[in-house]
Image 1 (cartoon, rainbow, N blue to C red):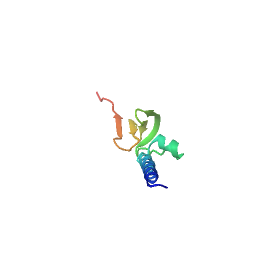
Image 2: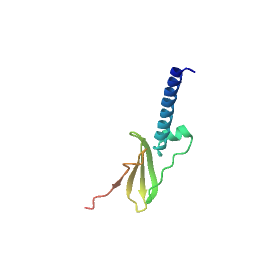
Image 3: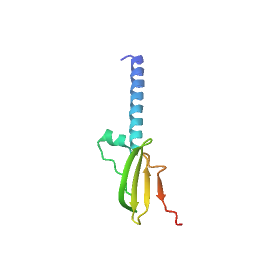
Image 4: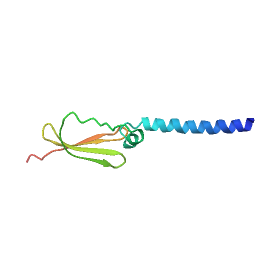
Amino acid sequence: MRMKDMKVFTLIFGISMSLFVGACFIIAAMPNSRMTSRLTGSELRLELPKDFGNPISFSTGRGGEKDLFYHDNYGNLKVKTYTDTGFLESEIVFIRDKK
């Protein structure tokens, strides 16, 4: 192989490996992602809240967020929002005005 051909091969190989490693890193960084589940064939696992009682509904959307609407162990209505990255997850608690 000529020196020029070797440099081109090395460049193409390096770029290919960088893209592969980058893709692996992105997949590994999204543990709650449906896309990861589809690509790897593994199941999507979401931990239920500690006060989970009975489910009302579950929905997905809005940039990978997953919302679980449920009754807690004390009869309150709650929404737990899961995200693909596991960061910025939230909970909503519905309360009754005691007039």
